[in-house]
Length: 400
Image (cartoon, rainbow, N blue to C red; front, side, top):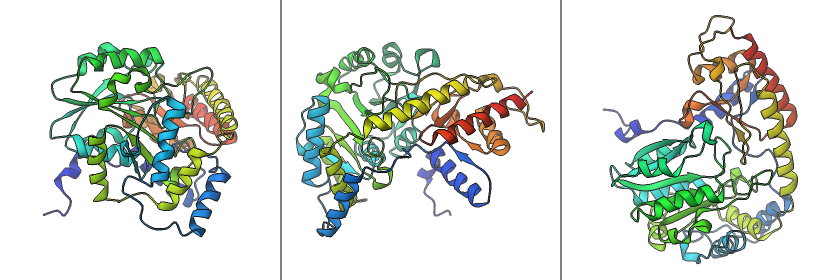
């Protein structure tokens, strides 16, 4: 009898984490690999945040904190929501975890019964459906088609809701597409939810500040305060402060849900590192004067990648509103063959052959629930991006 529990059959390893590990292995073996799979900024954590962590260490701030996070951090989060989003929360409505992923995990584990449905727009972040499945819920996918900017419509959402629907998951700007909902588009979706009072909304705002051009970010509760009694708003430090390894994410919502999530966390990680919490507090209370430079660099990279990919045979790529990903279609390559006769059957084969032939690592669209596409993270140097796009074009040109 296997030691592995039967529930493990419901989930699979994270495609993005798997790719990161494979890239490391290939580089260690001497391969010339350009990895475009990791969803983390290539900038360093701002100096004032690192200094706050050092000061916390020196001050002996190395003990347990409350399960939902230190009071200082939770108050800083409340202040952030009021200052940036016009939302009022109290500290007991805030929970802090080991990254946004744990907040999502805690929420679904605390709220889903067997067979409860969670509506997840596709393309989606790879972990959403697996966390739902691990919590014995049922993912229900609604496709945001390329013609609609990879965003779902109110009519699609209405059609997907059933008596078993427990949650709707929204992520804007999106991983993997970078698509972001306008205030008008959000209002159309929240209007649907206002007519279904048993359905909750989970909104993942982790890329809130990573937006370009004249796009204006809104979180759903800004658009429809009437959903406050059944909305969990997620955010974190990984993307905007380049703190992926510090592992700080947070959620704000109704006290009953937050308490249940804290109970889950009390029996797992207890809390994220006290030093990370001190740094995260300083991040929220400090200046964000580094951000314009970062966004300027990201936007320049985005424009470069979109332009070069659209010059590749068989590839087409939309210009995203936010995040640091593009989600190009490789539809024009499907059915072709590589020089050694390998048939490009789907996007999984495309990315595998691209890695083998040109040493460019990207993530297949199948992992995000919409084919035939692939995801590129442009959170790396312009030099690497330019070279990677040249290799992608060369690979596409080699197909017949």
